[in-house]
Amino acid sequence: MSLSIRNQIPGTVTSVTRGEAMATVRARLTGGQEITAAITLEAVRELGLAEGRAVRTLIKSTEVALATGPVEGISIRNQLAGTVSDIATGGAMAAVKVTVGGGELTAAITKDAVEDLGLAVGSQVVALVKSTEVSLAAD
Image 1 (cartoon, rainbow, N blue to C red):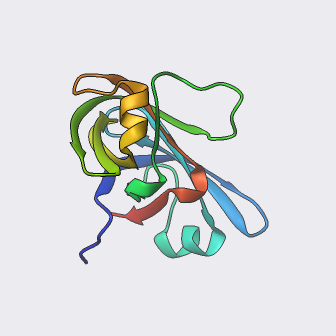
Image 2 (image 1 turned 90 degrees about the vertical axis):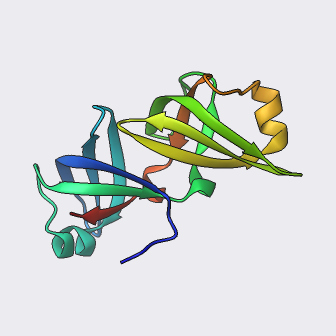
């Protein structure tokens, strides 16, 4: 199956915490960083997710925010440290590629944000992603 989501980083499930209808699934990415996905219990069952299962994390580029360092006092659980590897800017928006966790994430942010943050190739950043915006695919 082909997908339009370009942010796909392989990992391994480290834990599944079940709730009434939803679950949180933690995965260790190939590069060692951890990411959490909040998905339905039905998806956990259908994908056969359990500790040790190989998965791909899928994140739309519009759901990735960037910061110039770790952020405290925020509910966003996923903060992935990385390095800017490419910036493509247009009239209003920019696609910023960040090397993280054994893969690469693209963040679609405004051109103004790139300028305000002083981003350039080689900049150290933290990619922020809400756990509800992380999808999983079983490999």
